[in-house]
Length: 277
Length: 263
Image (cartoon, rainbow over all chains, first blue to last red; front, side):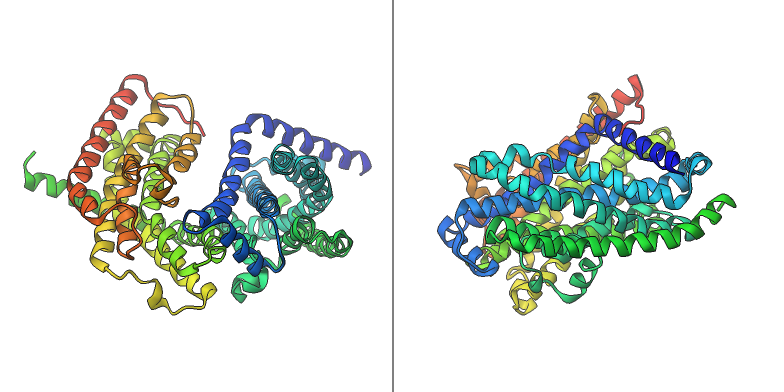
């Protein structure tokens, strides 16, 4: 069992790094597009009002008094949440579905391990790697804006990004398993591609979550995205790192629930998959 | 080809497109929801961080009319040359004398109504819940100009689609073209032409005509309405002619060298 798990983890990690090399252009877009979104959110309002007026308005909406550098840092860190949610939610879901329903690769996986082990290993390993790689551009961008403090911000945010990425991976497999093994979806991308923006829009991302309509907010609260948004706000704007352990404890608690759901559903999926669907 | 024959072929294409769309209803629903959600992620903070949120909504959101039309055209053309090549359907179209231009014409009515108009109305409605204003505040004050903007989104859809098809065919770069050109199309549409030294320069972007007319329907345009109305017909005809010519070149290239599936 131990060596089997190790092999699964190594295989998934190896594949993920190969994916990074092979689909580097996709990763590049994953860095650039959220960056453009974030810069747009900061600079578009300045095309119709002064920078000071926009800053005052931002301070009123978010609550506090902030400098333009803080606003920019905040927006760019939020873009990282966008990158990792797009990468993890869409990819973890679609890959599992493709492997079982389209490519038939699950047969090979089941020769060496179970659906539960494979799904949990995918959630942990792929999400961890994708979480770090999809937000890697912050290492270059944050110091450009805020010098050494930018690097400190990245270093402070990296552990929450890793923890939240794993939790998000577990969330994705917990949703992917029933939709992959229990039902037949003609167009799985419709779920995967809609879930990511629904989670982001529901979490408010750049604005406080209390401003978001309740339906969208309810969707976002099923995933650890609102906690990650609060973490970014705490680190970049409020400078209250004492809140971080509580926020991460909440994310870990959510991750535990997703793991239990995955384990439970995975057992049934295993027998379904071994029977040939 | 006479006018009657042309209209007959056009109607046939719309019929084919409508039936193709009926086979993909769930995709259209998902794409519309997707567009609304992404626009809400961008436009809600943008308007809330503006000192005058309603003015911001009138300036930025109509820009999406041209942008979404052009972007949809590009994705549809990519679909014709990527997934249809994968499924072997591109050759079936070509054997019937249909190229990417015809494929774009097939579905423009459904694409623009769902992904441009319905998405736009849904995002505006959603924005009113964030701003706490009645929906009447976000309706265009000049519906005729808005209707004209929507009609002029069609040439932008066709030209951008044809252009991306050509680039996709003749270069080894795949779908990345669509993402890259999409970013360029932001200037003048979502990013107002005001950022340029001369706002009229933005008209180089084929999607700007529709976006500026949509802005004008709210009285928030940066290029004078008279200029837009004078340029509307010649620009629309030029875009249509260019779209047709580029599609022909694209088809000639495929006939000579073939096309293989790539991402």
